[in-house]
Amino acid sequence: MLDVREGGGLSISRAAAPDGAVGTVRWGIRNPDAACLAQWDDEGVIFNPLSWQTHLLNEAALRVLTEMQAGPRTAGELVAAVYGAGQDDEQSASRDIAVMEALLNELLHLGLVTAEPAR
Amino acid sequence: MSRIGELGEAAIAARLEGTGLPLDFGAARVRVFSDHLPLAVAMTQVYRDYPVFEGESAFTVTAAVRRASGVRRLLRAQIRFVVDGDAPFEPFPAETHLPLLEWGLNWCIANRSHHRLMLHAGVVARDGLAVLLPAYPGSGKSTLTAALMLSGWRLLSDEFGVLNPAEPAVLHPLLRPVALKNESIDVIRAMYPGAAIGPAFPRTRKGTVAHIAPARACIDSCHRGATARLVVFPKYDSSGGLEIEPVAKARAFVKLAGNAFNYETLGPQAFHAVRAVVDRCDCYQLRYRRLDDALAAINGFLRGIAPASQPLQPARAQADGDSTAYASQAGSSAAAPASPTLQ
Image (cartoon, rainbow over all chains, first blue to last red):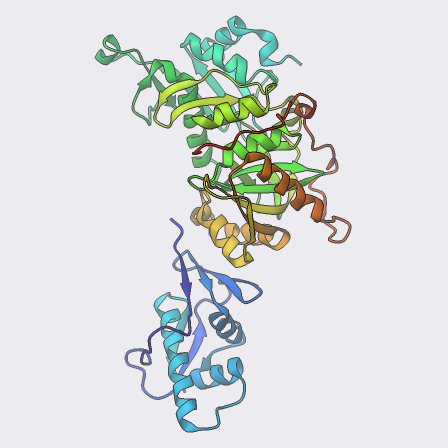
């Protein structure tokens, strides 16, 4: 049975960095050579070669995964890449990071990304 | 080359009881055996234009419809669908022979074609371009597919959108009789008096079922693919008018993949096959009440697609001539009846 779930909404509830993650975490696509990604307009689909599942992605998740195709990124780097330069104030920047981490945790839950402590 | 209808019921019955009756559907070949004479009569009607090919061949499925031999046959005559010596289904009433054969063959074909992606969809073509009509409950897919064939489109399949991962977006015919259910039988009969509709089988598990014989031109083209160009998700709605909405491609991908028989079996190959279809196709949802409105809309979709502005590679060298011999026979009534509840 195909499990097609919509992943990566920015409206999802906030979540902390993955368990055990202390400090900065670098996020990357799991098994990037085998993952299949397709995009049309502001939506896309990805096939996870490990779970054998296909997921519908919104624009935010697509942009994050596309950015990660070049290599692992921190949440801050992803915020900058996806939403442009940093926020004017610290509170906004912190909120953006939290929203990005929530998105990344959902992708982690789907088995699409990995989270490794930054070296 | 003789055709099944030319051989006649007695000869077909002898083949079914003897060496088997081979049938070439394009993407699958089957050989059928049976000791149940009424099946031979029905097959002679709905397979009338299929050629009887001779000689050796590899078959996707070798199956039989046999009279059941248990105690229950004393109470009510029953038949079994047997494949490779196994009877995967419970016995059916003997009078539902052709529906049992058709469902059994579809089941076997879907389970034995994992070298191809098998979408669950009706497929028709015109001018080498294919239209996919994915099947969802209540969609009226079979009725619409039948009406398109009877209006001159080339039918590739009523049930399977067959994709070879090595040939992106080329749909291959898997041409079987079209199964109509319940009120849709009378709808098609009224709209197309010339349609070759076989016997009706009441009280099956899906209600009354009847099968339309594919047009001879479709049968003779069953080894010629067509390039996917349009995906139409039909939805019969008895309370509304005609509504057409574009479907975002990613959503179309999900609907196509989620409705395939073996998407998960093929994994990445299936992903790329569906992607190639979605890349090349305009995708719409079509909500309709009147069948002729739906036909006009689909004809309009394809007219609106200018092949010259978006060049496509023809599926094969002979990409033209996707019209069937039914066009001249189909006497479309001036006041087509509204489609009944379908599926």
